[in-house]
Length: 560
Image (cartoon, rainbow, N blue to C red; front, side, top):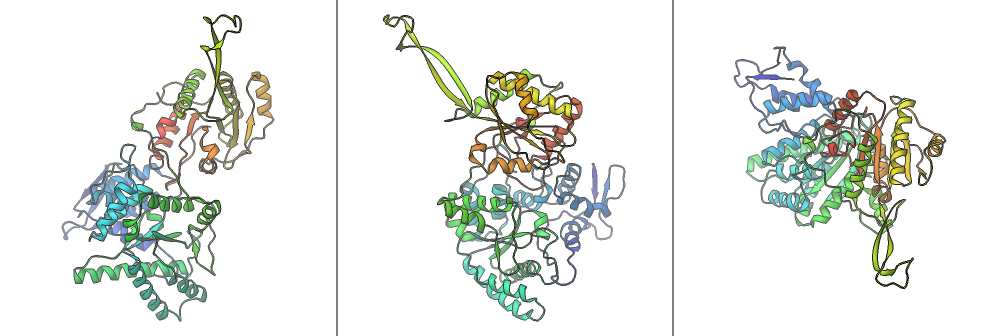
């Protein structure tokens, strides 16, 4: 959508809001005040700011709905592009070409303010090069925006954070919090008072302290609930510190980390960050801490108690201690030149898919053991000839056994996939497996996964393999890819396999960052309208940019 903006004073969005902890919980006025009203400030006070579309229709009254449509569970590509164009024209610092979703608008704004290029396959952010130097700059008197952008660009956590200059600054907040709790004691429910008292016992001597405050957006929204009171008081404290710092000309010692807009106005979790600890820590420790937070946020199990504080990272930390190892992750480097690939004009042949799969297997390299055995025979004088064992001038032959990564197939059997589509996809994979002469792992999936099965295709006829496929129960229902991502990431063995999802791409990715498996690729279903398939695949690739910028290079059989 083309927008025309006139008489608008370019703005800087401020994440500070003070949603009341009394009455019904309604974040919409705060969203209006924080995200919409700054965009409508007129340049000339004698006339209102004007935002219209290409036909001249007034869009002023639709801005709130447009922005909030980008905060849903799935990515809305139309709204994303429109709102990015809107922010690009109305904000002082915003890159409308950013691959990050609108939900991370405060991170994009902070990145532009500090002249940081957007994360991409060629622009990688790390704790060593970005987070730790930004923490030191904040301790030296910075405003906190560079520190926020460096964490957001490096780790993309889907949470609401607050930074404190040191553990002493956090202790000062706890003293202030205790005073406010006493002043509000008559209005607070006993459960809220108990949880606030427990909160004052926390220590922020480490890198972070993180809490679960809601199970979902509809939870803990009662008047004076712990979630509402704590966020309200944190925001009030930041507002008070800003006022005092402005009056005294001093540096701030507390600030907001609005990683995603949805969590800013209705947070399910809170992360309290010690800046000094980040400045003094090693890069491995900082990376491990934030990877642990992201791992905890991605966990499907969220237990929030009314009796005691629910720490976000308690479960993975306990598991790490039990296993006597740290929670260390090394996310794969995304591919490059993803935006330059072109889609095929015709459906791929079996040979095309075979070449693509073989190319990926070669790139992944050899493994110690797998079902994918690769044997090569060569001549050698180190071994006698079997036909002429006494003739040392004739070489013998030796067989070298090597192992390529296993192949794991996930076939979409949701309601949009017909029996003919399924059969064509299975027969295509059988032929490829026979040509590779390997066994393969198999799951069908819809909105849930079937049980994993290993199909022995080696040295079997196509008809016999098909009969074995027919005996495997198929699941049915909707479509959900993230369950496959979690299933693969939950096992190091599955992470080392070449995983291939055969689908029609009729699914919208989540609007928040997810950990996409490094060795997960996609292939199109057979016997479907190719123009529709390409359109759905392009839409899927476009909406996956904030999760895996190199996703186009993982569409086997679709790109050339």
